[in-house]
Image (cartoon, rainbow, N blue to C red; front, side, top):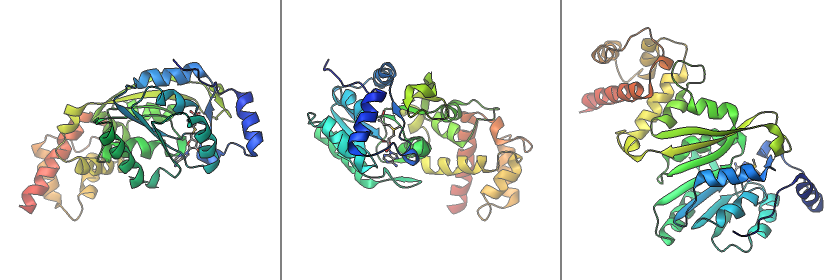
Length: 304
Ligand SMILES: C[S@@+](CC[C@H](N)C(=O)[O-])C[C@H]1O[C@@H](n2cnc3c(N)ncnc32)[C@H](O)[C@@H]1O
């Protein structure tokens, strides 16, 4: 095992002073200073030599070096040019690292294509179909990152991420709870999710205002493949939770406005035995998958 630099507060403050910068809160620059937890994240990600690992938020490169030592290739993305310069020095000795200095998101719903292309290129180079996300994510963009990664042309095997505790709870929430949302259903419809550890603010520098969590998300390929049209399901599920306090019939009528008549929506509901006065949050993930498929079939019949 190579010797890795520890990321202590004194190391970080002196390095930042040397370069003349401060942590930028709008970029979620909270650095993990408990190396045992950093190692826990790496262990949970179970990184192997045939894995291409994506890290979003290189920061100072502390987590990157540990992952690069185990991975086939590490693609790490950092928005802040100061951080990227800082990390490049750290990562200098690794030939299996590609650092991309840009905003990982082209917009809320899409990644920067150059990042996807780089991952595909590296997977082809080391002849693997194993791709994983492992990162201490910037909290302001954690939701689109996790959600969108299940909508790209390359599906990760797993995502091991440090995120805000509230977000981890929303992703893992069961039906009939206030946290159960379109995001919970989207992720749980194709993944197994587990909170590995809750992290208090003091394990980061600067300390954030909120608690965090290491979340392990394992993609279940059979469940994902069983969803006939992922994009349709994604949109249906979003529409279902858009007015989460409304009754199901009213939610469905507005979701299919202009596509299905009222009586057609009622027919599908009746066929599926759907209770008009239930709410989206009352349905399990499998029930929502089935509901989405019934409406997709109805629209297909209409088009055909
Ligand atoms: C929570 S820090 C993680 C730093 C480091 N990996 C660690 O574990 O200590 C998040 C990092 O993501 C970077 N970042 C924020 N928004 C980003 C974006 N949209 N695209 C790429 N990097 C981003 C920040 O500049 C910051 O360095």
